[in-house]
Every structure is written in C-alpha cells, then in structure tokens.
Image 1 (cartoon, rainbow, N blue to C red):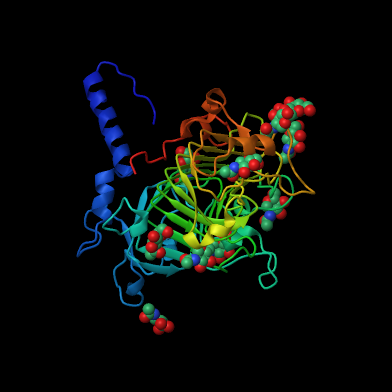
Image 2 (cartoon, helix red, strand yellow):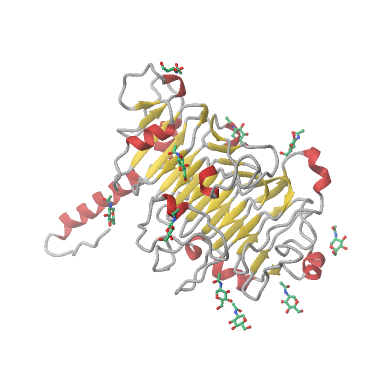
Amino acid sequence: MGFLFLGRNAALQAGFVVLLAVARTCSALRKGQRYACQAPSLNPLSGCPKHTLLIDASSANSSTEKNVFSTIQSAVLSLPHDNSTQYILVLPGQYTEQVNVTRPGPLYLLGQTASPDSVGSNGVEVLWHQATGTATTGTLDNAYTSTLTIAPTLNSSLTGAGPTGNTVPADTPFGNTDFRAYNLNFTNDYLPYSAGPSLALSTSYANTGFYHCSFKSYQDTVYVGKLANSYMRHCEIAGQTDFLYGFGTLWIEASTLLLRSCGGGITAWKGTNTTYANKFGAYIRRSAVRKANASLSSIAGKCALGRPWNSQHRSIFAQCDLDDSIRPSGYVDWSATDPRVSNYTFMAEYADFGPGWNLTGRLEGNVTRVLGESEWEMFDGPGKVFQYFRSGRAGNTGWVDWSA
Ligand SMILES: *[C@@H]1O[C@H](CO)[C@@H](O)[C@H](O)[C@H]1NC(C)=O
Ligand SMILES: *[C@@H]1O[C@H](CO)[C@@H](O)[C@H](O)[C@H]1NC(C)=O
Ligand SMILES: *[C@@H]1O[C@H](CO)[C@@H](O)[C@H](O)[C@H]1NC(C)=O
Ligand SMILES: *[C@@H]1O[C@H](CO)[C@@H](O)[C@H](O)[C@H]1NC(C)=O
Ligand SMILES: *[C@@H]1O[C@H](CO)[C@@H](O)[C@H](O)[C@H]1NC(C)=O
Ligand SMILES: *[C@@H]1O[C@H](CO)[C@@H](O)[C@H](O)[C@H]1NC(C)=O
Ligand SMILES: *[C@@H]1O[C@H](CO)[C@@H](O)[C@H](O)[C@H]1NC(C)=O
Ligand SMILES: *[C@@H]1O[C@H](CO)[C@@H](O)[C@H](O)[C@H]1NC(C)=O
Ligand SMILES: *[C@@H]1O[C@H](CO)[C@@H](O)[C@H](O)[C@H]1NC(C)=O
Ligand SMILES: *[C@@H]1O[C@H](CO)[C@@H](O)[C@H](O)[C@H]1NC(C)=O
C-alpha cells in the first residue's frame, strides 16, 4: 500500500487511510467471517464474502447456478487470472482430483465445518493417487503426482535432478501471493508405503498458508519448491520417507508430524546459492513428532529427523516434542556411501524434548547441530525466514494468518 501525504486535508485523508486499511483487512477474511462462512447452514454460502464459489460434489449435472461447481479445479479455472481476491467454500465429501492454482491473486479455500479449530473434524478430503519412479508409473517429474499444486507455471513446479534441481526460466513471474486453505485434507494414496515420490502438496514461486489441514502420503508428501514460502499451523502431516522436502522456506507451527514408518528422514532439503544470504529451509516449531499409531512400536529409535538432499540442507526442529521413534543421532547422512555433509550443512535442533531427545546420542552422532539461544535467534520467527521474491528482504509475512 502506498503512502498518503498528510497535507491541508489531513483529516479527510486520514479517513481515507483508515478506509483503505479496513478494505485490506476485510479481503484477508477475519476469524469471525471465516467461521460464519464455514458453518453448515441451509444456504451454505450465507455468511461468506460476496461472490464466494461453492463446491458441492453432489451438484454434478443438476446445478444451474453459475457459482456452484462439482470439482474444486473447475471452480479454480473459472476465476480470472488477475490480482483480485477470491473465495471458495467446499462442502464435505471426497473429491478425487488434482487441483492446480496458477493465478496470482489471493485465493482462500475453506472447508465447510462446524469445528473450524479442529483438523480431526475436517469433512473434506481431496484425493489423488499417483507416484513416479516405479515400475508401473515410469519416471515423470514429481510435480505431476501432486494432489494440490500452487505454482505460476509447470516449469517452475518441476523438481528436476542434480545438485540444483530444475532450472526455472529467468523471466518466470511470481505466482500466487496469498493462497490459504482452511480445514481441508489433501491425500495422495498411491500405495500404503513408500513407492516413489507421491506428493500431496507442491508449491513453488508462491506464498501459501495452511490452517487445520492434513497432508497424507508416504514419500515426499510436502514439496516446498523454489522461491516458495509456506506456513502451516495446526496441521497434520503424515509420511514415511523424506516427507518434507524442497528448496524453499517452510514454517510449521503447532502441528503434528506423523511417522508411518521410517525411511530417509523427515526433512530432505536442497539448499541453493543466492546472491543474498538466504534462509531457505524447513523450520518446525512447537510441534509434535509421533508414530502414526500404536502398532508401529517397532520403529522406536530408528527414524531420522532429516538428511541432506544436498550439502546445503537447512532445517531446524525447535521446541518440539519428539516421541521415541527418533534415533539417538537425530539427523543422519544422506547415505553411507554418499554422505553429502559439509560445513554448509545445517541440520539442527533447538530446545527439543520428549523421549526422542537424546543429547548424548546427538553429540556422539556428530551430524545434528544442537543450537544455543543465540544461534537460534536469527531464525526464531517466520518474519526472519520468509523473504521477498528475488530481493531476499526478510519480513514477507503479510499473507500469514496469525489468528487461525
Ligand atoms: C453426469 O452426467 C454424465 C453424462 O450424462 C454421466 O456420465 C455422469 O454419471 C453424471 N454424473 C452424476 C454425478 O450424476
Ligand atoms: C498483479 O500485481 C502485480 C504487482 O502489483 C503486477 O505487476 C501484475 O501485473 C498484476 N497482475 C495482473 C494479472 O494483473
Ligand atoms: C481429515 O484429516 C484428519 C487428520 O488426519 C482426520 O482426523 C479426519 O478424519 C480427516 N477427514 C477426512 C474427511 O478425511
Ligand atoms: C496439474 O498439473 C499437473 C502437472 O504439474 C498436470 O499433470 C495435471 O494434469 C494438472 N491437473 C489439472 C487438474 O489441471
Ligand atoms: C524449463 O525451463 C528451462 C530453462 O529455460 C529449460 O531448460 C527446460 O527445458 C524447461 N523444461 C520444460 C519441461 O519445459
Ligand atoms: C498404522 O499405520 C501404518 C502406516 O500408515 C498402517 O500401515 C497400519 O495399517 C496402521 N495400523 C493401524 C492399526 O491403524
Ligand atoms: C554453493 O557454494 C558453495 C561454496 O562455493 C559450494 O561449495 C557448493 O557446492 C555450492 N552449492 C551448490 C548447490 O551450488
Ligand atoms: C566452509 O568452508 C570453506 C573452506 O573450507 C569456507 O570457505 C566457507 O566459508 C565455509 N562455509 C561456511 C558456511 O562455513
Ligand atoms: C542415547 O544415546 C546413547 C548414545 O547413542 C545410547 O547409548 C542410549 O541408549 C540412548 N538413550 C536412549 C534412551 O535411547
Ligand atoms: C563434529 O565433530 C567436530 C570435531 O569435534 C566438530 O567440530 C563439529 O562441530 C561436529 N559437528 C556436529 C554437527 O556436531
């Protein structure tokens, strides 16, 4: 927002400033408005912002109303490719589809629910089944497997290979500046075990926020790709192998990471050299790491917090409650024959606790950095790690909903 010079008509202009500020807050949907829109009611859209689109799986072939769709993707495709703010309300049900968001303007996806503060009560599941690199699937880029994708172009969403991954064309614009999802589950159920990359979320060149959402798969569940900023709060993420991976910046707060077995590590980051000091990495704060269910007791002491996808991996588990699934060393090398560890590798913990926290084991393993307060300080909040597109300036958090 620009500045207004307070001259002779200061009072008038001050009033205008307030109006602008209000308009801006409104478009971001305050908590009360979100609750009103999400609450089940006879007319589902009552309480929602004007022009909210409705997704109703049972409406296929029957609805004549322009704002009612039977799939999320058909509604997304109906939206203008511009900077306007748009809302979509999804009625409970299972939606078997891939959702791709390329538009730059704010887009808020809301799941209808009577319990907007409980991921466990979510009634919407968006489901896809795809993996890559298996005997039956061949070798597509990982991007093609994802249930939900937020990226301006296909090329920007490709994982690629090698130490720096896919080269994104230099003139690629930034994608969505403010994507949010509330009370939605995203699942990729290709097979009930690691069988190649199988993404539930893929986000690149975009700012994306997830609140009371779940992401389930076994391998590479969440991909936070190049120049992506992603914030998750009160979410649940389930996986087995490298299930938080990418190049961008991911901040997870007050959430649960569920281990469905062990493989690789929880985090697998590929750091990138930039002309500015970047803070790319995965930051998991005040969250819990748990085996997915009690019958997985055999994984005790075996699962790794992460491993270096390249030697510039950065991830930090801070103030997290770790169950006994975590191995004494915490993090591990990439593999015995290809460790990928150098003085750039930053696989760290700050003030973790619980049965999976073992200081003796961490020091003996010599791969996990145990941070003191002063080392943690430069990363200790989303405002310090979310950077602006290309400039690398910190404080890119206007799209984060702190109230959800
Ligand atoms: C919608 O119509 C198509 C074509 O007539 C049909 O194949 C499909 O089963 C219908 N879907 C529903 C949900 O009724
Ligand atoms: C959206 O806004 C940005 C910056 O404010 C501008 O550069 C861009 O052209 C706009 N995009 C569209 C599709 O209007
Ligand atoms: C959504 O995910 C949560 C957390 O795993 C689960 O408790 C809930 O049953 C799921 N709902 C649907 C409809 O899948
Ligand atoms: C989403 O994008 C992937 C490639 O990233 C593509 O294969 C898929 O067909 C797209 N899905 C939809 C619904 O547009
Ligand atoms: C993506 O862009 C890069 C850089 O321009 C190019 O080399 C590559 O061929 C593109 N990949 C695809 C699949 O279009
Ligand atoms: C526990 O989780 C694992 C991994 O997802 C699954 O294979 C198994 O069926 C689950 N067991 C129970 C009893 O839910
Ligand atoms: C980044 O720069 C460092 C230092 O020059 C170098 O050791 C490392 O290989 C580079 N990493 C990548 C991914 O280019
Ligand atoms: C890593 O070590 C090299 C010399 O071996 C040094 O030039 C470089 O600055 C170090 N980088 C970091 C991040 O410590
Ligand atoms: C902690 O780690 C040490 C060193 O690896 C190991 O001997 C010990 O059994 C571990 N303690 C627990 C409770 O796992
Ligand atoms: C590994 O041991 C060396 C030598 O004692 C030490 O300088 C380094 O900090 C240790 N690395 C980690 C991650 O603990």
